[in-house]
Image 1 (cartoon, rainbow, N blue to C red):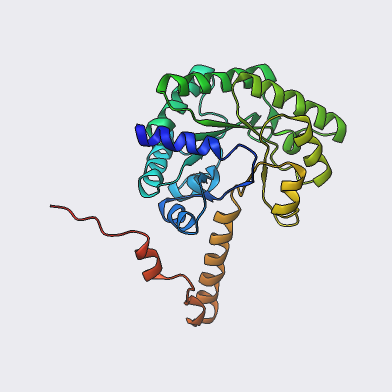
Image 2: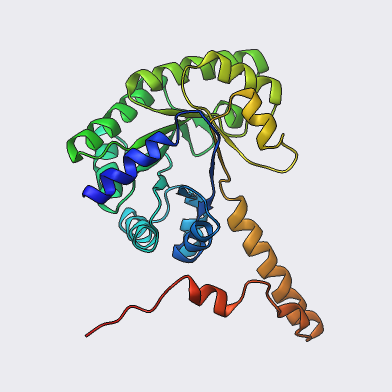
Length: 277
């Protein structure tokens, strides 16, 4: 518990907005070790990548117990803070969300994402969403672990109308911060001017999702962004390369494309053998 609390405090300090926190999203213990070996200060999970690795679709289809076990494996092999993409909270009520958050804390997590969209189809009532964040904060307080709650605002996935969308997102972000969130994540927002406007309007860290075509880290820092995550993109990039290699293996029967720049010895180095008696 002392180690987890120390990691939670370290993770919280990384949100002080003195520099951007680059947060790669892992989907299993192997990907997490690769990211830690590269020198990232913290790691997040991707709900989609974790679900696929467990044999389920994204969208809270993976059982909570299996997700917790996956988080526990990632935490076991890393020494950096780990934050969990907890989707919409794995529960219909705030009390159920609190129980799920406690399960993530028990697995070693020091941060969570909570989204206010429902199946990418509609937005949850802002009051209900705020109550779920408050329940998550209360669960963390009871557990004694000061987790970072990243409140995802889904307006740019679901809602329409540029100005209405911005004002509604701002209203939601302020409600979530008042309820106990630490960071705001306007997922799918990629317009530099709007990102800058949101960062200026909120006295809190803002997380954006990296994607091709977005401004680079230096420009996002200038706009006031505090944290950048990668969502499913690293997982799908890895799977895309695997699919292409397997497709070539099946189509032309040659093997030269199976040579890896980061191979078996490199991965083995990341997992020193554990001696048992």
